[in-house]
Length: 472
Ligand code: GDP
Image 1: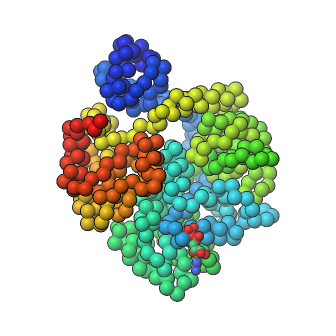
Image 2 (image 1 turned 90 degrees about the vertical axis):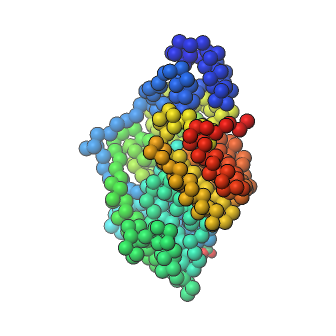
Image 3 (image 1 turned 45 degrees about the vertical axis):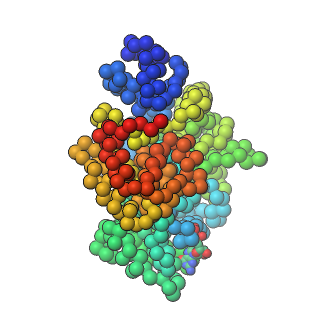
């Protein structure tokens, strides 16, 4: 109704425009940014977004360069199952106690900070794996600065290793390889590096740019050097933040503790969080009553790149929710309530992702330059053949980007990656496995499966030319 008034057209026409896009709406329903653009375009209007949603209605603090100081990198550990992610995180947690602090890290709060001998710090997300990483990203949270990808030297570059690489690359997060288990007699790190090279991932020893280090998460061999490489890589990223402003960051995990109430671990990404601050986190809000670090010590403040668990929120926000400190409690409460309401209104339709049917229209609108595809197939041959053919469909206007390809069924992790990267999933002689279909429906991810190569290529070609007849 609001947008109809702005365009001076009858509300019913806006509703039917939405319906023709396959979106059932009522008068008072809110439309997401993309739908708004498409609908406005139908009526010859262009939408100029001043602030795109409530997220942005919180005044964006613009830091001037002189207020920015270097902050510690935030690192996620990924890799194939059993290759040693947990062992590496445990080893780092046990070995690195912040200088001058008593006691080791006793609490698992979802993230922890370590300080190396030279005083430099690194923050680790304590939920290893690319699924957790991409789930956060699908919620709009980009927390990780660097990814350590663990590969067991007595094994191989495995399917989940490849997934982890694709997930990190899709997020634009630099990778450092940790070639693990070199204490084992069967370990052959060179074989792993050779395999990586064959995938166009040249590590430094092989004349490339990607950092890699041989380690043993079990004995600790090489871990210190690996962390030094992390810091070196971080330096190139010139990570900075302003500590002297209201804090903002991301929720890492949250749960209800019988004795203490809601406990939320957050990672401060900008500003300094203090006890007594009014916090808005996703659909929740509250005044910070107490804060603890990963050692269980009470702390009064937490600066950029510091993980801390807080008490005082009126509920458990979701991992990946953004949090920010607001000047007054009322405002925090109001926005949280509005978000909760929006969430209820939109629970029928979550975020809208690209579908094959929509590609032509989006290209015509001119705001769509890259078509991201996740390709899964039954055998290597068909995956490679399709990759080649799809890439050849790229035109001046639109670039076809295969962000992940692999042999195997379509998994939940593929769907999450599609959601985080706005991609469509194409399966050749494979189907969604386990929970993938359910999650895809919820996230509105377009999954297309084919058994004839020609059909897959033709559909994509037609879609890009805006000629695909919609499937009903
Ligand atoms: P994750 O599934 O990637 O988290 O792998 P884990 O950390 O659970 O490790 C899987 C298994 O490999 C465990 O039995 C570990 O003890 C073992 N492991 C991990 N790192 C090393 C290592 O550097 N050397 C040896 N020998 N074993 C390791």
